[in-house]
Amino acid sequence: TFQAVSTVLTLALLVLAASSSAAKNSTLGISSRAGFANSYQRYFVYNDEPVTFFEAWHKCRAHGLRLASVHSALDDVKLMVALAQEDITQRGPWWIAGTDLGKTGNFVWITGNKRIDGRAGYTNFAAGQPENLSGTGHCLVAGGAGGTQWNNVDCGSKSRYICELDTCDC
Image (cartoon, rainbow, N blue to C red; front, top):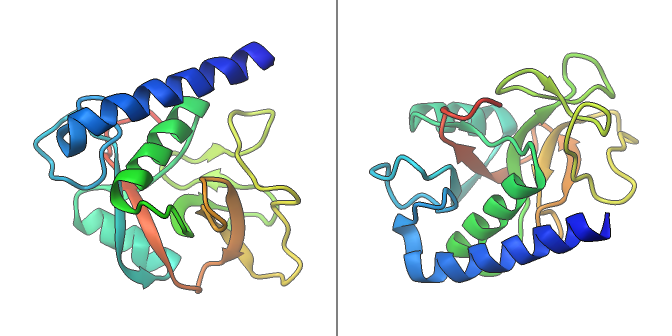
């Protein structure tokens, strides 16, 4: 695991270095919403107005995108770089496409109905998450305290949001 963490950190540094010179027209798939001319771009960060989970889903669709899903450590690095390009403080939270509205405690990506758990793939829950003490935390946000870790919150609360191209096999 140390080697895997080391590899991810090295990759993150390389991606950050490349993104600073490639800016928003990057072919690394990590740019924020600079435009849609670059077919390699994946994540688009929307900081203009806080919206509910369902409004975020609708707004992404209106832009020809979908709410972001994160399926690997590499996706997480790409997301982190896109956030840094759009919001230097990286202070979320931002809606992502995870929810357990179908069955409490069983989170899935609404973009592909894939399970979100350690057995079925990548997760990045913050310590002690997911928890649902209030009984209303059914939608996922990333970056509630900086970074990209996930937390489950009330779907009706308002946050900024992250969309992605609808081309990944997620």
